[in-house]
Amino acid sequence: MARVTRIAGLFGALALALAPIAGAEAQTRLKFGHVVDVTHAIHLGATAMADHLRACTNGAVQLDIFPNAQLGGEAALLDQTRLGTLDFTNSGAGFLSRSHRPLGLTALPYVFRNRDHARAYVRSDVLPELMEAWNRATGQVLLGPYYAGAFHIFGREGYPNPESLRGRRIRVPDAPAWLVFFRAIGASPVPIPLPDTYLALRQGVVEGTNMPLGVGFSQRLNEVTQVVTMTYHQMEISFLVAGGHVQRLPAAQWRCVQEAGVVYGRVAQDVTIQGEDSLRERATRENLIRFLDPDLAAFQRATSEVIAERVRAGDFPQSLVDRIAAIR
Image (cartoon, rainbow, N blue to C red; front, side):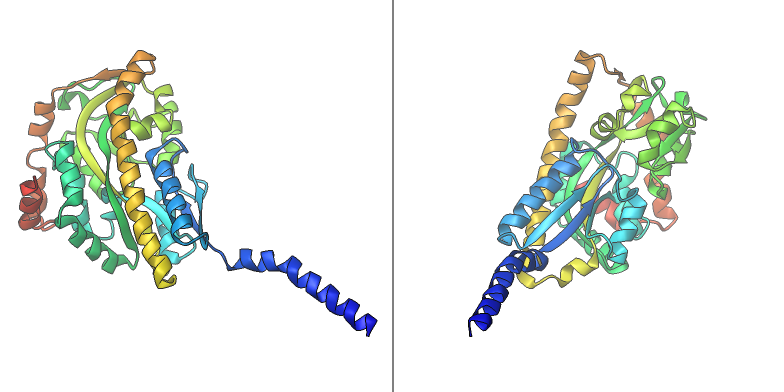
């Protein structure tokens, strides 16, 4: 009997020892991969998202974040969310429009009058319709839309007008929407993944890159360029992209994911705007790079027919163009 008691005691101790391990195995661990560094709005938004998920699920869901393209570039990350090997990533309308073209209308030149117009679009009833159509086309889920910044040109020199960019090799993301502006003004757009942009500029493969200020400085592009030409030629709308498999979480946890997506978009947008309002002043004060204010009216004139041409080509309905233009 004493031997049986000792064995029972050993099994009891073993069960207690294994209990924390079983609990840890029961915890759901989700992965978020992105391509920028830990100072960028995307990473700070992901961190806020992780905090919300942990609190909302009482610790049952943990979000692990992989910055700096550790898991691949933007295209690879989207493929991974589609295949179910990654749970979340961030991507913009221009890139996502490869799967549903109308979503990319806002990536065309000067669609938005200004930042306030872009932010109002995020809050409008137009964007959810486009997001849902993209979801149906891909089987993935868009959450947390946000204004992700105006695009400018980091270059070896400044470009005061469209003529100064003719024939110049300018890096763009690998998606058709990003080619439009530069082709319209006679430049030569070169699709290059973000992680390879620094080296492409340093080696002279390209002479410049289109980039929001926040991303440009997070990628240290001021080390391989001399001037930022403030063209405001595109204003990016970005999203939290979830793999369709994430919807199979228990209903309460999926609701927490949806809430966390809202938190993600709000934090990422706030950080983006704060950066836009301060980066130029700080970079000028610290002599990190020079800034050029070009002839914006000339750039707008040079690209003024782009949207009408795309409508005539059947890429976008005029009704969508009109709805976005009417947003206040």
